[in-house]
Every structure is written in C-alpha cells, then in structure tokens.
Length: 75
Image (cartoon, rainbow, N blue to C red):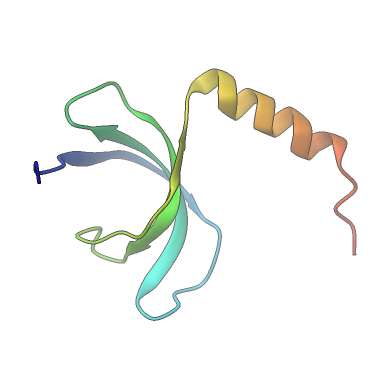
C-alpha cells in the first residue's frame, strides 16, 4: 500500500473534547502534496494519527454552511 502524505496547513477548530486520545477537528490539510482542502476528522493531539474523516472543497464547504445556516439547531 502506498504511503499517504499529509500536512495540516491550518488548524480551524475543535468540535469535541478528547475521547480516547482523539479530538474531532476541522482543519485545512494538504493530502499527497495537493492543494489544501477542508478536512473534518478525529486526530490525536499531536496530529500523528487520525481516524476516518471527510474532505470538502471550498464550494462544498460553502454549500454545507448554507445548509447548516438554514436549519433550526436550537434544543
């Protein structure tokens, strides 16, 4: 299996508290030397390990923002 290269280019924010050493975060990540994309996944605090996640282009992130803004998320 080919090695996957990544670089967290910008930390945007954490969505949860650490659970089993992992924190769900939104970051900008460059995968295999490509342009950075929005990346949402659990990371260890040191960012040396990650779990499964999802990436978004800028257009997809804007569409997600618009969807979330249209929802009533009050408890």
